[in-house]
Image 1 (tube, rainbow, N blue to C red):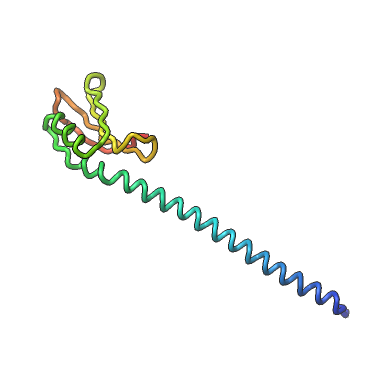
Image 2 (cartoon, rainbow, N blue to C red):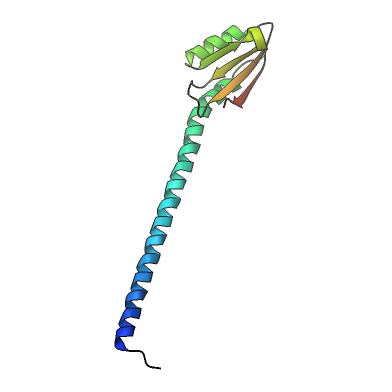
Length: 123
C-alpha cells in the first residue's frame, strides 16, 4: 500500500506535535515536582529552625531546681511562657506565639521544683 506525499507530510507534522506535547508535559511535571520539593524542603527547614533552639533549651533544664530559675532563663531567650502551675502543675515554654511550627518544653512542677522537662509539639 502506497501512502501519498500529503499523508506522509501530515504524519510527520503529527509526529512533531506529539513530541512537542510530550516535552511540554514533561516540563510541567518537572516544574510541579520542583515546586512540591521546594515546599517540602521549606517545611523541613522551618521545622528545624523553630524546633532546635527550644530543644536545646529544654535539654539544658536542670531537674530538682526552682522553676523560677527556668522561667528567668526562658525570658532571657525570649520564649513564650505559659505558667499553669496553679491549675495543672505545669509550665509550658513555647518557641513563639504563632499557631504553626510551635513546640513546647513541657515542664512538670511539684512544690515549685522542676521534676520533668520534655519536648512536645504544641499544635
